[in-house]
Structures are given as C-alpha cells and as structure tokens.
Amino acid sequence: MTPILKLVISSIFGVAAIGPACAYEQSSAKYAAKVPSYITTPDTVQTRIGTLKFFDGLPDAQTVQKVYDNLDFARGVETFLSGIPAASVYAACEGLSKAGVKRNSDIGIMENLMDARSLFLTAQSTTPYVFTCLDLKDGPVVAQVPPGVLGPVDDAFFRFVTDVGLTGPDKGKGGKYLFLPPGYTGAIPSGGYFVVKSPTYSNLIFYRAFVKNGDIAAAVNGVKAAARVYPLSEAANPPSQTFLNVSGNQFNTIHANTFEFYNELNEVIQHEPADAFDPELVGLFASIGIKKGQPFAPDDRMKAILTDAVAVGNATARAIVFAPRDKRVMFYPDRQWGTGFVGGSYQFLNNGERMLDARTLFHYYATGVTPAMAFSKPGSGSAYAYATRDSKGRYLDGGKTYKITLPAPIPAAQFWSFMVYDGQTRSMLETDQKTAGLDSNQKGIQKNADGSVTVWFAPKAPAGHESNWVQTVSGKGWNTLLRLYGPLEPWFDKNWKPGDFELVE
Image (cartoon, rainbow, N blue to C red; front, side, top):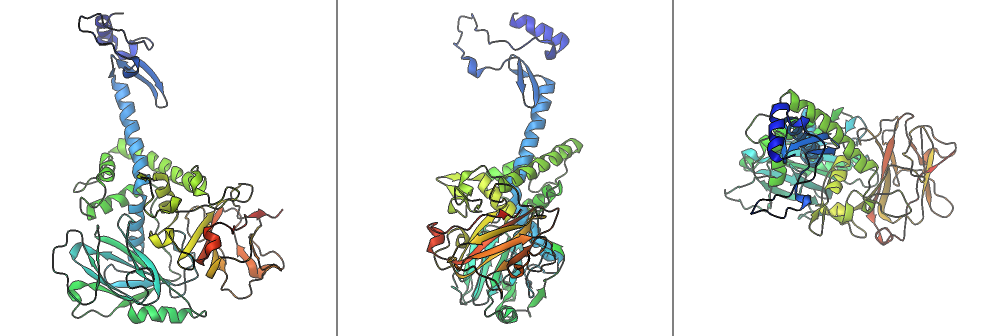
C-alpha cells in the first residue's frame, strides 16, 4: 500500500481502519535517507495502556487521549512520591496549629511524654518532645533553645537547616537562634545570635529534652525556664512565652494518602517563594495543575486520574518501606533490619545520584532530617534500625507472639529502646500500654544469664516475661524501631547484630 492510498483510507475510515503494524518502507526518492527501523513508529503498537495507533508516526485521537491520561497519571504518582517531604512538614505544622500551638509564638511540649493518641510518624515515648513551627513570611524570628537538648530544624521540604542543642552551634549550652527568611536583605542585629538563613518561610523545630534519673518534670522545667520563640521585631521586649502541654491530645500530624494530599502540597507551593524548591520538582507539580499563583482546580477527568494516582503512589510508598527491593536498605545479609538513611546520606545522595526511593522510604516512614541521625559517631547521637518482618520474612502479626534477643553487651552508651508502630499510620501502636514500647531505663527489665536481653511482643504478656513485654494487637500489622542512644563501635563495624523476631509457636 502506497503512502497516498493510506492517507485516502485513513481520511475516509479513520486511522483505526489501517491494518496491522507494518515495517517502515524505505523511500525511492532521489534524496532518500537510510532510515534505521529503531527511530520509526509502527502503525500499531501494543502497550500496557492499550493499543496505540498511528498514521506514518502521527498518533490518532484515541492514542493521544490514552497517552495524555497516562502522562497525567504517571506525573500524579510521581508528585505523590516526590512531594511527601513537603506535605509531611505541612501536616506536622497544621496538626500542631490545630492542637493550639501557634506559629512564631507558642511552644508545644510533651510534658507527660508521647502516647498513641497523638499521631506522629515513628515518634518515641522515652523523652519529652518540644515542638514549634516558624513562618518567616513576615520577617525574621528568634528561637531561644534551652541547654542540653537535641534536635533539628527542617525547612518546608524537610531539608536540613540546622541542628539545635548538643549537635548544633550552641553545642548543648543553649542560646538564641535568629532565623532569616529567603532573600532577607535587612540588618542583622548583634546580640550573640546563631544566625540561620532558611531557604523557605516555613520551618519545623523539634527537639528532645533528656531525662536524668527518671525526673521528667525536671527536664520539662528546664525547657520552660529557657525556651522562647518570638518575631525579631519584638526582641526589645519579648512577650511572655506560652507553653502548651500536648501530651495525650488527639491530633494528627501525618499527611493525607488520598486526593487531599494534592491540596496539602498546593498549600505549600502557594505559601513559599517560587524558587524555594528545585525547578524540576516545581515543574512536576505544575504539570498536574499545582502552580504558584494559580488555583488548583482540576476538572472531573483530572481529579479522577489523580485520585487513582495517589492510590497507586501510596501503595508504591508502602512497598518501598515495607518490601524494599533496594538491597542497600538492609543492614545485614542475614537479618531483617533496615535503615531509613540508605548509604548514610541525610540528603539521599550517592555519587551524584538522588536516591529517589530512599527519600520516599524515609519521609513516608519517619520525621526529621539531620546529619546527626545519618552520621552518628561512636558514643554520641543515636542509631536507628527498623523491622517489619520476622526471621522467616513474614510480616509481623499483632495477634501472634514473638521474641527477640539483643546479644550482650548491647552497644549503647546511654540506653536502648524498642517502639512499636501501626502499619497504617506509622505512628505509635494503639494499645493499653502508654509507652508503646520498652527501653533499658525502665525498672525491672530482666537479663539473661549471659547479659543479653530477650524482649517479647504479643497481645498478652507471656507468663514470667511481663517486665520484658511489649503489647501488640490482634488483627493489626505492626513494625518496630530499635534505637541505640550513644551507639558504640560494635554497632558501626557490625560486630554486634540484634537478633531477628522469632515466632513463638
């Protein structure tokens, strides 16, 4: 069939009438090229999105619709996976705001420690948390940090801005931090400030106040005696500080996994400077309608596609966390323990590569980015390992009984802890145990004859092991984080390995 005849038939019957795929016909023209087959497109192509049809490389109307639907879907999925850090910070600050902790003025503190009534990604119940959110859109803000705390400040995309406390520039002595907004050109006052330039208006500050000799009240009072937050414009006469005890409050700080996710992300894009994020990311978000200065108002077609995309994106994130295919996630070839910081990079970088799945894994599962978490040193900081499966590779089942042994000596200069988390929320598992875990500071923990410690996880305490028991819930999946505070050399050189979860039949 000649190209002219093809054109006539396609004009009368539509491209769909054209027969099966055919090879490219080399031209007999005087100035013909030698066209390699791999740069051409057959008339019919079978793909995962259906049959695609062309006339001489030109897609027909149905093909155009299919590929644009697929493009919008794919970009919707990728927007979810890449936008998790921004939506997570937004959700955290919105959740704190709804709990009464106003930006730039209030400080929330877990005076009675964290419990499962407050939804936070993989939080812990061993030390009091302190939270405040900054919004630098109206100008610089001062945050005064008390002595002896530890924590990061992250920007609106959960990028590391600075540490405060022990690993920050105040080195645990406390001090005043002056946060400057993007593009700030005003005067920087003297007065002993640690000056921090943030790439975004929104910043999340959270740190831990360490408990000595079990005296939680003393740790809380130490925070209240020195912590402050206020606009720089009020530095000459700072207002009295408002502290809110948010322990036991029912509020949420976790981003949505439905279409609402895109609305959360849109709030971030509208609030922040246009150049606050990587142009590739901004372009990705814009491709599905999340554009600076424009309303996010998808039509029915686009909303249906994005509703599907966020469902697939959410499933993808859960697969990356709970069934990772990247072998670098696993600490040991013969254990079920994984790391949230693949390759030890808090920026998720490896030889020029942004490890996209590694970034998704961390931010879908956890909160807070700091080099101190990724690059802890022997005797200081903390080390983390997470597990979602038992020794046979099966998901942990809340209705079953497991035991796990930490060999002696456990390489933690300060203490170690287990926390259990809900598979749905990645937040503390809702049980009748307030702590949702166990740590070595608790009284009565039993050691084995060789100094090792065996911990039991089950809906009911196994007889004789009540002091070493963490409660789980029948009908629920769960996962856990093992934390070592002040990890020692055997952790880093892997001469020490935690056991796996053994199912007790």
